[in-house]
Length: 122
View 1 (cartoon, rainbow, N blue to C red):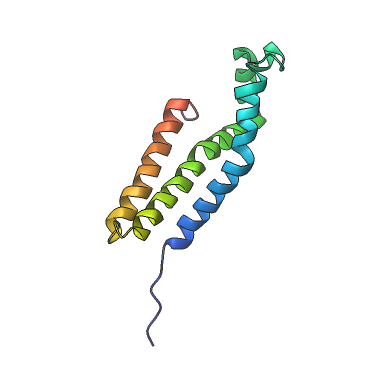
View 2 (cartoon, rainbow, N blue to C red):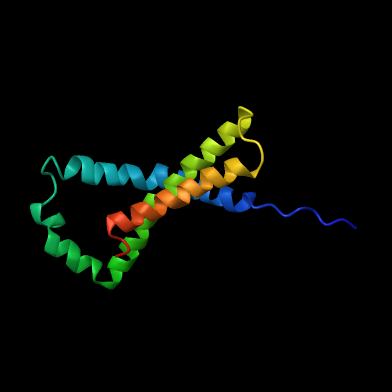
């Protein structure tokens, strides 16, 4: 009997759906908090002071915050690149594994660069 060919698509669809949830649930809250409430002065000035953020990041909850920040950066990148990859496929511009490697490789590279330059991993 012939075994069915294994596919890596479930991995990419899982990252796509996680990125979609992140876009829908997390990013609007971040935009509201960091883009509107804090600049308008509706949050206390000391809420985002350097010493307070540093103290938070050095605690146990800071590790969870770093994981949250990493997910908020990386998952939307994979979501977007999955859409690009399937859009290229629908337009018949993506033939073979090269488009998949380019799209997901670019998402991986941009995720690594964003994590390193954001200071999540020193």
